[in-house]
Length: 129
Image 1 (cartoon, rainbow, N blue to C red):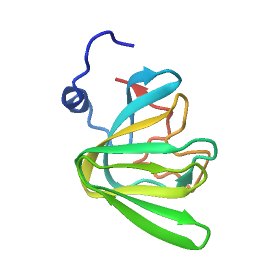
Image 2: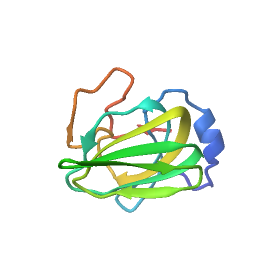
Image 3: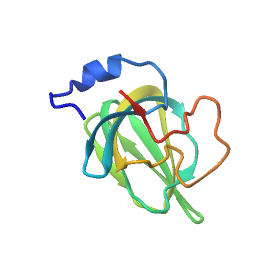
């Protein structure tokens, strides 16, 4: 962990890979991650943890499925949303976005259960900045 403030804009400027989260810092046993996103992620579920999203720039959409029910939430810049544990979801962004996520350290970016992971999605517990 760093003992100096972290400039999120500078951190985001330091990488170009989409759907490939970077660990900014840790809070207790949680990672604070940032990511650049565009297009669609993969439908996935985190069985044991909620997933927190904060949109830093752009717009993020999160499709949610609970059994036969499906809905979508739209998060503009500055919006936050928590996907409850066990809820199948698929983030997407038509024009691209920068996001911040808060998850337990070691949580996979494609959850515990997921569909086939396409090449443009990095299945990872996060990369160091």
